[in-house]
Length: 636
Image (cartoon, rainbow, N blue to C red):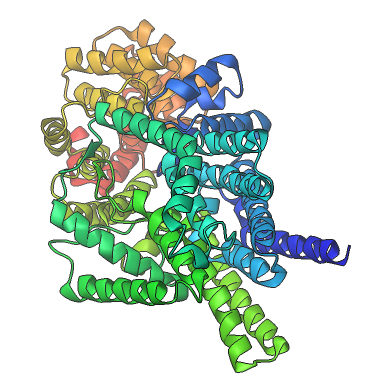
């Protein structure tokens, strides 16, 4: 009874630690990296749970691997919370807290050592390397697969206590659910073999010289059904990625560089486990080769730890088990077999389960050392509390960077993780905010790193279009299609709507009307209520002299968005063409009030006032337009 009460108190402590770190994420929104594909622009997920969503969850190729349970969990969140980001983050917080408590129960059942088990679970709960998996809505697959991964381990401890078919079936069922959440758990059967060695003792030290081969073979055979499940999921994942040309052994990145990256990544996260500073969403590939000291230092570190773990395998089995745990669970993520879509060398989220192995080594090793040196238990408790408190504070700070996309990627740049993704994202956000000089600065830096990075080239084209540099815009956008002809051809990706619309908008501005109608029609076929494309289609109708059709199209948008400046400007322009100058002035006056720097609205308002004989007022608006860009003076 006393042990149960103590276990309950530990679980409450783990819950409170998770809340202390991640409660702030309930006020966070989504970020524009994967969250767009997974949630913000995903109509099927937003539709909530239904039979069609369930079928889609098993058959879509958005992520090029099977993760139907994760899709369904996103759909359930959309049904419960809509697109309130805080609700989605709350679910991830709850699952992470459950994972922490389950991990404690797993080690308590395995080892019967409550305080070391609690410490391993606490390190899992509060380590800064795990913030990414919890604070990022798209990484629901991490926390959800780990939930079923922990339940598989718990079911396995139940099975090994009294092996029975129905208990084994429970293990297999939990493992299937884990695989259907994220394929990265495919190494779990190998982990169960490690647990057979320590702490379960099913492969005992004294059998090394007698029954080792037979005992080991029996334990391997026992795992064959699980290994077959892992193999099936691995094959399915490989073929799904291969159909999208996203997997290659020889890949875009040279094999030698990928092998070096594997060594460096193992060493990198060992260092970050102890000194978790400078963490970022994206760790870019190096320009050129890895520095020799990184590869050499990581190799020496890995070989040293491996040698120490092997030499103490009989006396301190937790060291070899924890070390192989870390190496094995990281193996599917180290990119020797590379997906082309990976623009980064490594990621914090890959340590979510793998780092538990290092925690096992540290916690049980520290306990043994303290016992050998006869360190008072109170001193051990105080030291443990200090470590956990420091990590909690670090994680709380790290979680704060996930408030929004700009904060997250500016932080990445600030800590030296400069990547095309970070520069392009900050540049795109500056572009959206009409901070054009800042946008150009960051987008240009992205192209300095990769001159063929199509997203940055495209954004520079949109920037040029927004500034009225239409020839420059066409140069950029044409270059995108030369580099990537299918840039906007993915009909099941709603984010492509904006791309089609912008190509259509530029074609309208340059009076390439047939081309413009082609792009805009494609966008509206994907979404007939896509207001931005409707606005540009209205502008196109206006340019071609179909003023009534243009007004009908534009007023559809205005009914839904009465303060849309572009729509107000286009209706005003339509009225000018129809010589309805007073009506034009009403629409354009409102547009300028809403956006005093809208170049076209200023010019059109000046034109309408001039037609009404109010030349002095008209000149004032023409001057304001000219002040924004010298090219506007010609529009007077």
